[in-house]
Image (cartoon, rainbow, N blue to C red; front, side, top):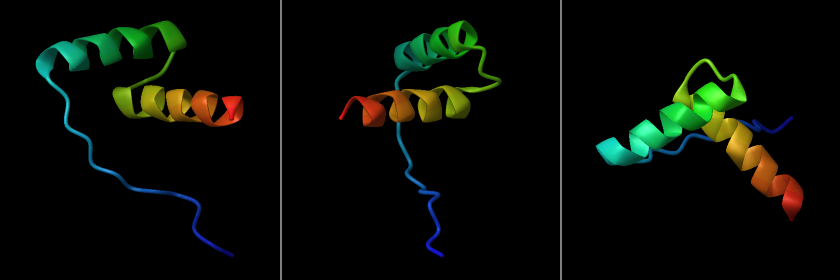
Length: 47
């Protein structure tokens, strides 16, 4: 069975990190990583 987890390193500015933290809070995520996973899943389901 293939490994479905992906790893990708992404760099953000301080302003972007602030926006991601706000997004995470609004989504009920525990951290930015969970918020990003949620965002990627949303975008993938649109396609």
